[in-house]
Length: 248
Image (cartoon, rainbow, N blue to C red; front, side, top):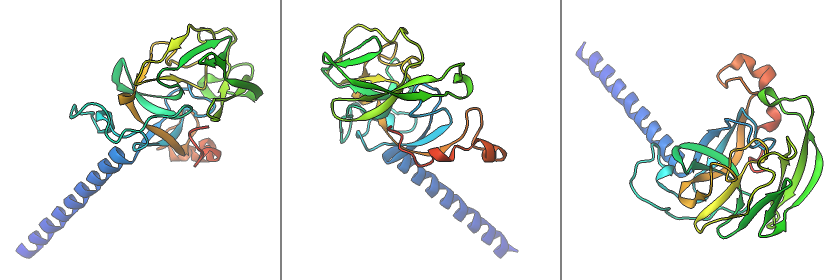
């Protein structure tokens, strides 16, 4: 009888050790390498859709206290810092509330002058190349009576991606000129008329607030469906988005 109890106790302890090791490994991977992230809004359509699940590369820009779960105030600044590049889709902590994660595209680097005029993005006084390439039909809560014009922007460094123009002459289509401070970045959503970004309350984003660079979509399901609702997979999975780049 005693041998049986000892065997059960030893088996339980082994299971606990395996569980602890698995949790530690998950924390290390999430902190140093990749963090899963889900898209909560339509601000990055059509590049990223509500229901997309993607990996964020934590090592792309180095590490800050925001790289660690629960963001303990262990240090300031970045370790092994690498600067975001123009055109990167990146996850960052909202400057006004660092408990909230945002995902947007980097369009302005430190020292840049950024302005939007009649829906056209200008960087340092030069218009960013913009051409109409088609239309898009939004799904779910973002659906509307007509298709949305799709434009392809090409930044000065050659990064190219599509943007949506939901409404002509929206509040974000004509802005003042923004001068990006040193150590900060100017972020915009690809869905230009439905994005809270650096044109509005988000403001300039400090380098310290960057979590990582979006890499690849590993799962995608129609808006309103949970990944746990397996019975909806046959109709709601967006298989064409699996393993698609999260950048463009």
